Image (cartoon, rainbow, N blue to C red; front, side, top):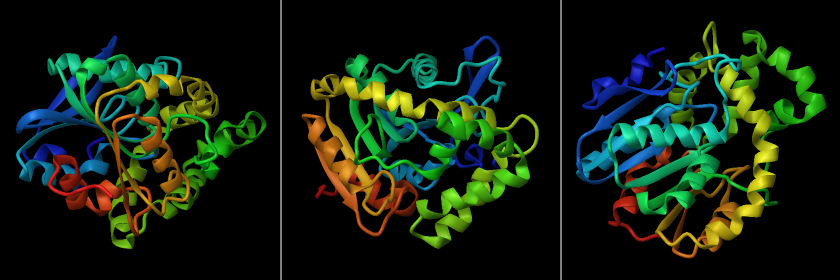
Length: 298
């Protein structure tokens, strides 16, 4: 599926198909620029379009950007769960595939939402390849500061998901659930009305992203519990970490941002006022300034 209204292939980037496992490929876009490239990772239930406003700002500042859709999302292949192991561990391998394809020795790794667990795992175990880790309203471990959205509960709790998942696979049911969950993620109604219609189509019809979403959601509770035992590894991560969170996010908000800033020994924190889940969409100029160091964190 091609996101034609805001197609990345039409704004100066080069589109690549990158093999990951067998015949399964992901879609990536490389935007030319100088310096260590920014490698930008999306969460769910969205795709690489969440960086559509940030990338032009970084390019204005001369930076190279590479963005891709995880397998199961956006323009990447969407194999069924019998043919692909959707998991954070598999997403680590997808990050590795992108790094190898572009022969990248080091990146500035920018992560949002679902990308937190695989990206942080990759960064900790490949510290030599990370020049900077950037966290945008994301999560990693079980903590009271992380509040679970209703859809995570609906499609992950064993008894509840057995009832909800079959209904959730129906487009007529999925659409209102999707809109209900996405609405509080945006503070700016104009941004919400622009991007929600672009995220939804990937979940509709044949060959959609529901396979990936339901399988990933199912694993979130166990994943964050396991990661709670890995905080010591984060304490030992010595590369720069920039934490930029929308401060009014109901689920991954200011309290969690401060916790991340305290966990990593070389972290700087910026809370974006009047911003919910998507600082890179609602305040791209500010986020770009913070990333390239032309504006101080606070």
